[in-house]
Length: 126
Image (cartoon, rainbow, N blue to C red; front, side, top):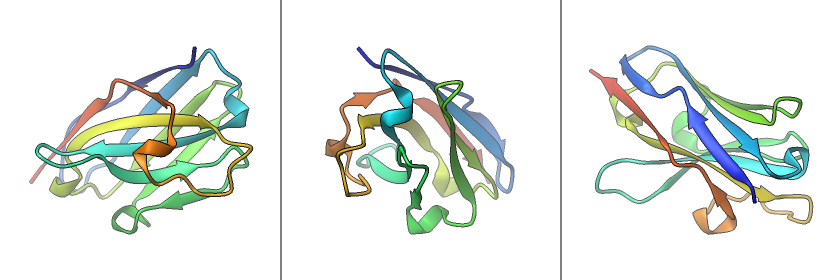
């Protein structure tokens, strides 16, 4: 059973940087597409970024140029480096994973993923 555990959230001021991490266990991490989603109060779960098993990446428009997704297959960990944070980035950030080698799509819908972490809160104050 694949387990995902996020860490690294916190409270920062607008303009600051923060890195959240997601450690995976129980599967062949290098074969997984890994994504970050976020959910603000009263809103649905929103796609943020994905890094495919091949290393290709895709971002939602609102974070392009500010966020960077990366992975370390030796550590079974995916990262989301966030910079120039804005109050509208405030949300619970979730990592998600799926066995990716058979897919051709990026995986921008929550329904594309089989495995989820518990989430980590990121709060950006103005």
